Amino acid sequence: MSHTEKLKNFLELEIIPDLEVAIDELFEAIDKAKSASKEQKEDLEEMREMRTECFAIVEEIQRNEMDEEEAEELLEELIDMKTEEK
Image 1 (cartoon, helix red, strand yellow):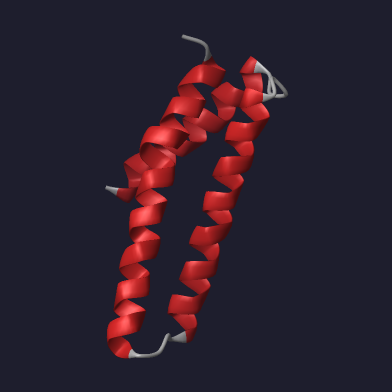
Image 2 (cartoon, one colour; image 1 turned 90 degrees about the vertical axis):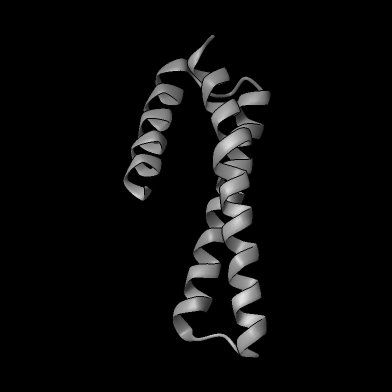
């Protein structure tokens, strides 16, 4: 499997779903509190931007606009981020 395929799968199966769950949980917390703190607003914006970037990377891969080296670097960065998260 190529690095671009691995990156696409990792984004679609791990990163994007995790971001969507985190966004949903933050929305629930905001809804319960009936308002959002500045920190919650910033977190929400950051997560939305990350999700948008992930979708853009997937599209770039689908259009064959990403080389294997770039995909490998991004994959390593994302795996490191995910590992640090735990």
